[in-house]
Length: 486
Image 1 (cartoon, rainbow, N blue to C red):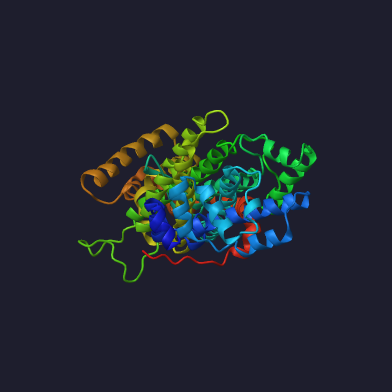
Image 2 (image 1 turned 120 degrees about the horizontal axis):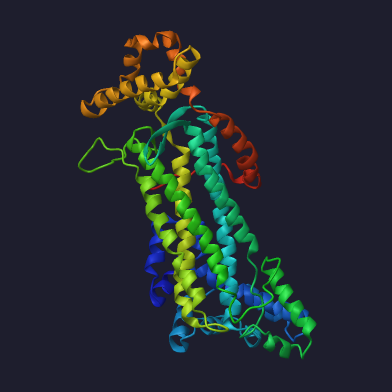
């Protein structure tokens, strides 16, 4: 992923290397690789030269052709040696580029400052990083939407405070996850679309060097900025910058990734809790081992991995906040080393989280019989209000019925909690002569589907109105499946 010679001479970024080799996809690893970075620098120098030539500066076609022919031919060993001597990464690569482009050497980096290549390349990487993440997030949403649709009307215990509560459905619970993911989808798309190019702004953002090159012609300086911005694939450039683009931009990007991390952590924690109840499980390979000591175990390791990495993604949010807050005046260099870690790590982390979550959502296993058993254990308690209402309709007194049910419920609860027995409230109701008028209605009163309210209808409307339309731009990229090396 990184040029071998360059890694050896520059020193490996061990943390990023771990993400690249162990976790991240090839496309995201390449997006933040040194090869992508430095070939982008060269393309930015070519864009600048082309624009300057078209606006009248004495740059020849031969010089541009020479630069283009060596855009990808980087001698990393020479660049490393130059950086050792100069202690300046941009000038090291200017010299390395100039060495293989002797004709173009005099005009490489003409009028620019280091941030012309550094910051503009970062913005390109951020944009391209979002373009990698968005289809992956769309696929997760698509798989989870299919799951929600399939189980839209399967009753299951709801939980508040992680205590049994009124019933919901498996599909409706999945829609709670989907709602958060849909918010993340919109936030990532908005952050991507809000990105602008730094453009050609000079050392403190005033464009003074370019104004001098064009002998005071302001219009040409603006044209130059617009032309380079367009060649780099951006619609707009920031109108004002210091030496760098505002580090608030990094906050905007990473805060949305951190928010995605929070969403994924919640989803995967829920899956882990449900796996403990044996109601839902993540995919489990035929020969996969859950525990070296306990061969029966089926640990939710994918969900655990997502939670582990999601915490890291959320924690990375502190870096851009602190970096932006301590940038002095037009710029200080204490942002650089931090950003070289926090920006790629955030995208690399989000990338593997989404790949893993797609794998989970493509193979979620539901155990309806286990869910049904859990409902049977709790439903008699939940049905007490329905029983009271039926008795009142049959001519009973609400307060008398409430007291009867209270006493029987406490007795049944004692059997469950103190004796470890099953919930026998229904049997107690059937034996009590007081409830004779409604015995024929008990089966209907205890049908789980009468306790799920409008959950199925909510699922249908939510998927059709809010989820499916969100996925339309990514229909062509939906067929990619994820196979994880665990």
